[in-house]
Amino acid sequence: MTRIMRYSTPTTNEQSSLVSTLLDGGRLRIYTDPVPDSADHSPADADLLLELQFDSPAFDAPVGGIITAHPLPPGYAMTTGRATWYRALQQDGTTVFDGTVGLASDNPNLVLDQVDLQQGALVTIQGFQYTSPQQ
Image (cartoon, rainbow, N blue to C red; front, side):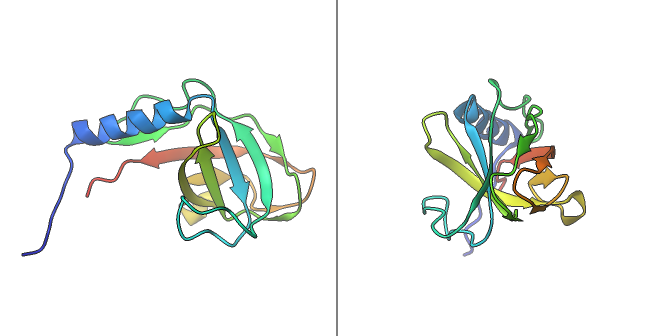
């Protein structure tokens, strides 16, 4: 028999609320490739392009297991490179999760106004959502 596990909407909302709480006052770091195999692994050879701070609370209330980040202020690229992924961290630096970065047409978790960054360029977050797994 195939194993199946599905979560109810109230459960996914609770999971998303927990993630939101973990990120209150935390950091969002945007990197170049390579992407680590797991959020438990160091960014290793990836270059840190941008670091921003989450508000507290970091996200709106969950709807259907999805939370939307409160607007993050624009930031300046720390180095030149192509943004491909991000890491969301708690205030103490503990990793919560990683995700994809891209333009809106790429359908990433984190939408930027540009992905090919030049050092010193102003970078704007156009949207950021977290979706709690439902299966």
